[in-house]
Length: 189
Image 1 (cartoon, rainbow, N blue to C red):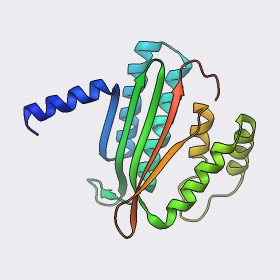
Image 2 (cartoon, rainbow, N blue to C red):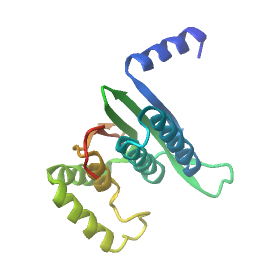
Image 3 (cartoon, one colour):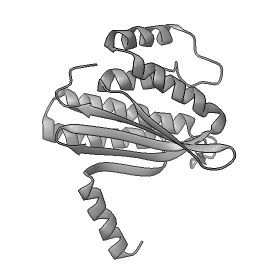
Image 4 (cartoon, one colour):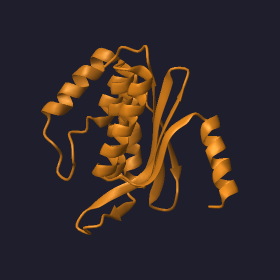
């Protein structure tokens, strides 16, 4: 990328209040490193505010979703394991922060993801708490890495609905975008 292009990219990031963006393979080491960066950056600005914990945990959950579930897989140096690739962006303005992730998904799973988001978005605080407990108690499905509580936890911690969008890419894949807002004064969690 030429110097001028990079300068223009930098200016656009500043205009859009992008605090962090990453595109590529999302390994566990990368998630830990970027999450620590978020924790340090936000702690300097907010001290021990609840917003630091919320942005930190929501970032981690959404980054792990990319790592575990992206249809675009990248092998790590050891060539024995692969991780998902995608993009994750954290923006902030006027004490409202947004964590947005995007990655390729198989078209066959998109209806299930959309339905899951819609179900979560219809629930209130207490319903989300109960739904979360039920999912934790139910056994993990074969081939899944977790109990399916990640997006439920994101909604619980943010106190806001999960925005989602799906754009077809080719015959078998779509690009899934998930986004959630976090407000400093929100005391959900």
